[in-house]
Structure formats: structure tokens, C-alpha cells
Image 1 (cartoon, rainbow, N blue to C red):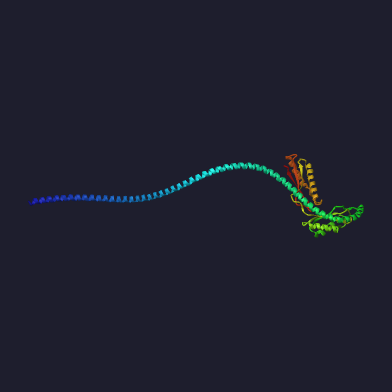
Image 2 (image 1 turned 60 degrees about the vertical axis):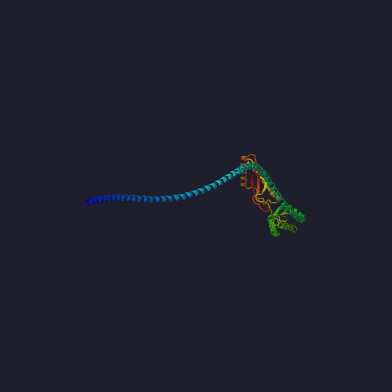
Length: 381
């Protein structure tokens, strides 16, 4: 009974051992499964942590992208607003430009009309200008004539003043002439004349009455050089001459002539008159001018030019110049040759055409200055 019980107990124990072994085995399996599950859980946790980290990084990227997107949205919105404003400005500018274009078109049309009007007025003005130029040329010629006449009048007034003084002085000289005439006539039958009546004895510029003594001394020396005795001026005549010289502040040109025929060896009585030593012709002023008919014949041209030169000489003599100051007043040989060559050349382009030859003063011409003239050719219109 005990053995059976022990066997039964042993069998029970063996069953329990088997059950325990099976339980242990099951526990090992469960432990291994738990380890596996733990490892899987750890891997899952690590994966979840990694995914969480990735999610966090993605969230940060998303947040940054969102922030950038928001910034871009704001920037885009600001740019859109700016573009809207610019569009409005451009729309306004377009409207303004259209208005300005219309205004410019209207102004262009107005300017075109003005240009056409101005062109018409310009053509009319050009025609009027030509007419005015012709009038100006005629007025200038008239002005030159008036200036010449004014100069002539001034010189004539001065001459009248001088003649008045000279007339007064000549009243006293007439008595002296009457008393000396018989003596001179008898002497002239038997001897040569040193001076004929009214022949120039001496001339020159006297600045003031104080210079008259020196001037009369030179006149006396000139008389002696011609074979006469000392030249004398009567007291009355000298007083009149001093008055004339004192009246001309710019100096006087004094000419002393023989008051009668003077035989050689006789005293020379003087008759003196004073004129203002003014400029008769300024440099560049025309003294004489004449028309020349062009020709290839230089000798014919020379005759025409010399005729104008003779007119200039007569004009100068009429203004009070003496033969001594007119020495060299004609054109020099070289100038005459050049002038004739120019006229011959002009005749080649216009035979029988006419030009004006003007003789002009090279420098200011006074009563006491040598005269020098130059020629200038002016084509006739």
C-alpha cells in the first residue's frame, strides 16, 4: 500500500516534475518571447523615438517652411500691393501721357501752322530786307554826302572867318601896295621877278600866336632863298593874323603869299591867311570816285583812271591844299599797274561792264600833310 502510494506519489511527483518542466519550458519560452517582445518593443521604441525625432525635425522644417511661406505670402502680398499701386500709377501715367500726347499733337499742328506762317513771313522779310538794304545803302551814300557837305560847310565857315580877318587886314595893305606899285613896275622892267603876285612864299602850322615870330622868320628865309629880301608883314596884317591864329584852338594852317610882284633883291611884302588845321578827309574817306567802262585795253583804262585822279586833285585844291602837299597824291606806278591788271581781269568776265573806282585817303588828310591816295574797285549792282 505504501509502495503503491509511494509509486503513486512518485508518479504524481514525476507528473508534477513534468508539469514543472513543461511550465519551466513554457516559462523559458515565455521569457524568450518576452525578451523578443522586449527587444521588439525596444526596437519599436527606438524606431518610434527616431520617427518622433524625424517628426520633430519635419515639424521644425514644416514650421520653418510655414514661417517662410508666411513671409513669402506677406512679401508676395506686399509686392502685389506695390504692383497694384504701380499699376495704378502706370494707369495714371498712361492717362497723363495720352493727354500729353493729345496736347502735343495739337501743339504740333499749331507749330506746323506757325512754321508755315513763319516761312511765309521769312520770305516776305527776306524781300523786305533786300529792300531795306538798298535803302540803307542809299542812306549811307546820302550820309556820306551830307558829312562831306558838313565838312565843306565847316571849312567854308572857317574860310569865311579867315577871309573876314584877311579882308580887314587887306584894307591897310592896299595903301602900301598902291605906293609900292610904281617902284615895282619900274624895277620889274629891268630885272627878274623873285615872286609874282599871290605866289606862295611860305606855309606851315602855327599852334599859337606866340609861334608867329618863328614862323615869319622861316617865311623870310624862304623869301631870301628865292632872291628877294627879308619878307615883311605889316603891323595891321600881323594883328589880324594873330587874331585868326588865336581863334583856332587846334592850331592854324597859315599861308603867306606875295602881296605884289617882287623883283629880285626887293623886300617881299606878305599877305597871310590862317585856317583851322582840321582833318579834311579821315583815313578811308573817298576823295573822288568815277565810273570806269571795263576794257581789255590797259591804255584806255589808264586814261579813265587818270581822269578820276585829276578830279581828286581838283577836289583837294578846292579844299585849300597846296601843290606842295599834293606831290605824290597820284597813284604810284606799281599801284596803277595793279589797278589796271584788276580792271583787265574784270573785263574778261564782263566785257563793257561798268565799275566804280574810288580814290580814298590812306591816312587823315590835313592842310599841312602830304596826301596819299589808294584805289578801290566797287562793282556796280
